[in-house]
Image 1 (cartoon, rainbow, N blue to C red):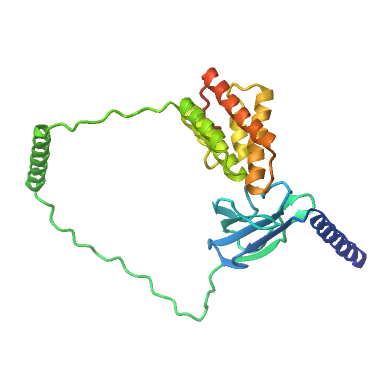
Image 2: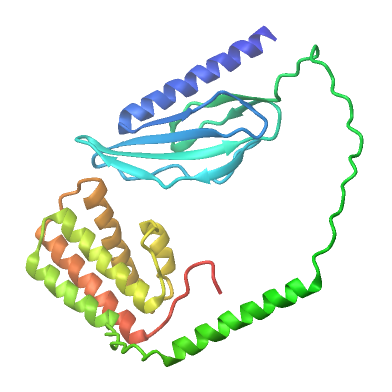
Length: 303
C-alpha cells in the first residue's frame, strides 16, 4: 500500500516536471481561475481561462463543451490583448452545479504538455439551524368573489375602440402620401472590386491592409452568398466555403490568405511585398470565381 502511494506521487512529479519543461520550450503559459471555491446548489461561479502566446507561436485557445458535475450557463467571447512579447487570449465562462459534493474543475489542455491547474469546488446546501422554531401550517383563507362586471361595459368599450380605429383610418386616408425616394441598390461584386482597387492604391500598413482585405471578402460573401461571418473565426469561415464553387487549389490559397491575415493581426507577422500582392490577387480571383458560379451557400448547420 505504501509502495503504491509512493509510485503515484512519483508519477505526479514526473507529469508536472514534463509540463513545466514543455512550457519552457514553447514559452506559452496558461492559467485557469475561479471566482469561488465554495457555492450553494444553483449558485453561479465564473471560470476564467487565459493563454499567453509568445510572438511567432501559433494562435490557439481552449475548446470547452461540457464539464462533469457542472452546467455551462454562459460562454463569453474570446478576447485578445497584444503585448510587446506576443498575444494574451482570455475567456470567462459562467458555471453552476446542482450536484452537492466536492467536485473538481479539471485541468484544461491547450497542447501537449501545456495544461492549467485543476480547481476544487465544494457544492452544498444552505446552512440549516436545528434550533430555529417551526412555523405552524396556515389554514385555508376564504376569498370573497366580487360581482361580475355587467356585459354592457364590455360592449361600450368595444364600440369606443371601433370608433377610435375608424377615426384614425379616415384621418390617414385624407393625408397626402409621402413621396419616397428610390433606394439605390449596390451590387456586392462591383462594390468589392471597387474597394479592392482602392486598397491597392492606398496600400496602408500591414495590419490595416490585411484587416481591410479580409473585411472586403467577408462583406461580399455576406451580401452575395448569405454567409454572415463577422463573429466567426477563420477556421469556422473556411469550413463554410467548401461549396462555393472554388476548386481545391483556389480554396487552399484562399485559406492560406485568411490565416496569414490572422498572423499579421495577432502574431505580429511581418509580410513581404510579394505576400501583399499575392494576397490581393487571391482574394480578387476568389470573388470573381464565386461571382461566375452564382452558387448560394446557406450558413453551416442550416438546410
